[in-house]
Image 1 (cartoon, rainbow, N blue to C red):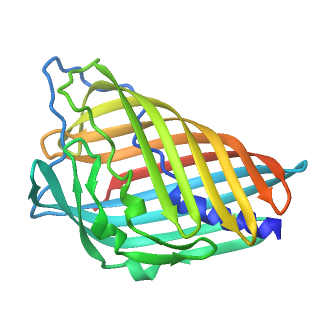
Image 2: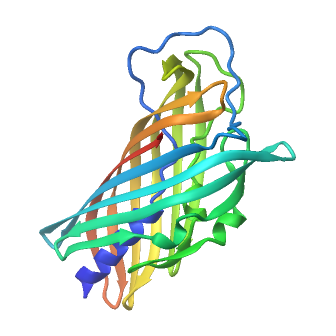
Amino acid sequence: MFGRSIIALIIFFSFVICVPGLSQAKSGANPRADLLKLEYKFQTVNPVKYQVATRIVQNIDIQGQAMQNNINSIFGCSIKAAGRQDSNLKLEISTDTLGQSIESPMGVSGGSVPEIKGKVFSVVIFPDGREADITEAEKVVYSLEGAGSTNLAQQFMDFFPLLPTNPVKAGDIWNIDDSVRTEATGNVTNTRVNSVDKLEGIETIDGIECAKISSDLTGTMELKTSNQGMEIFMKGTVTGTGTLFFAIKEGYFLKQTVNSKVTGNLEISSPESMSFPMVMDVNSVSEVIK
């Protein structure tokens, strides 16, 4: 029974694990001395189509026996500007793809979530990417095997990489402290991270001038859930790096790559108390596609 509970928890992880936008510097960025005000704008006519692909490798030590689980998930949507709400940006979201596959000692499971295809709703974000209103996304509900029902608001709590609130120039460093709380049936996850960000310079990608921001992150993640009569608690530390390219004039991100690790323990408080070491390696790529 415990093995099946762990698999259900893995399925839940694949859709709710939230690591806010990070980036890792690469060579080749051009320095720029003038100040840049980076903010989200998007376009009202031509939607920007995104695909988010995430791979999680989870290793758990169950009383000396190693168990590895591989989770691959994908989410696709199109985004365009839909006006302003006060000083914030209203966006129209059209969802296209949501799915996952899970490889575990118990076999292979997963598949697509067809009920979200073609759903259209609005979200409102602050100019720096923080969510201001995602209540319409909460209305798009779908079921996830082993984890109950959830909604698309979970996808947009950390979809947009966070930008500096003040103008920056190449070489500037700033901190972003962020926390995300996600919920599904019987499950609550709280993630808190601090990233040290740096504007490395400017790169041109497909003719678009992009700001390149590097970040290092540290933080914590906690999850509480009930499954098959068990009370399960997970707590771990988060570390990671990634790469972000943000289109300066157009006002949207072209690509974000995040590599992170969660190291901690799974604890079961009932019907009997047990604790198991756990490590999750999470690799995610969010990018514009044609």
